[in-house]
Length: 448
Image (cartoon, rainbow, N blue to C red):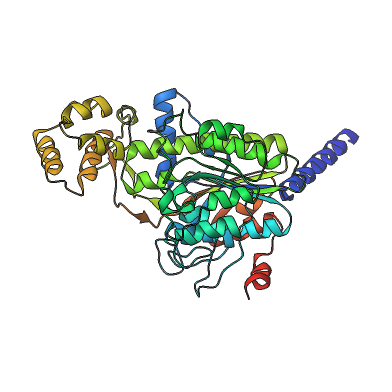
């Protein structure tokens, strides 16, 4: 009898301890956003990985906890600006808005709340640093196209400690090869403010302290399937470096946003190879974040997309099959394939055989490809990539975004806040709650 009572007591104590751990809150937040990543993307990447490596499990599979509804304040189909603002500010807003409310007034962000508390902040992306998702955490503009203004705010006002990505052209003047019309060189201004700068892989690896900026391309960084590892780091390498720098001599903690940016671009292009390789690169970055969180014990990792892109289906036209092994033969993104096909004297049939493994082009496909190249048809890339998708039995319903719910993944202290199905703005509010930030109060203090 005494043994039974003791066992029940120990079980109750263990349950209370587990519940207390589940309800605890983090010191650090790693928010990971796979832009354009839908439920079919998860299946696609897992099946592709299994077909090519034999591995059955993605890092993302280990901590799936729910779903998010993605619509904007003015549309059932969101864009990245409104989607990212839902996470950065915890509010619904209109498509195109960067950290501003539907009435155009700025909303306080997770990064601004973090800086008020003395935490470090950083972004790691493969798009331009001024693109919609990173912009929504580090600036306030009514239209996402205002990238000059976004870059200015990121250097002058955001206080970000770490900035890794592409898009250097918006930080330097036109006369220096950039895109700024005001003549300012924001990178030099940042250097004068104490930022360490890196513009290539060697300089990136030498970064040893914050604040730091690493910009690897004038525009977006390369798709993972095209990436030259001697010129650009992977998303996982950038994530690992960011975590090393952010935790160094930092007792207060940090908020880091990591975006798998070009998953979305491949979806817009209906490019299955670009899509799956960028997803797997993102999953490798997720694994780095999870490894850090498991060692640290005080870090919340949340992965949630802003929306799905492409309306992708695995299986098409009544065929109950899809073929990741066919997709595995594709060596480049559609951007690269189309550029190679358009070169003078290029043989599109030989090119597709070499770069995609396709050897069964029909006469109709060959005629269409050659005529579109000759006419410089603007939809040539779509014609080309849909031939690739057809061989893998992959379908696409749009070259834009769709309205489907996206998966939410969470690990670490505060995970309980993300279980179930939530509005995207509620996910943003949960991120703030986990970090003990009051974004509504901060908005009133800062902007009203």
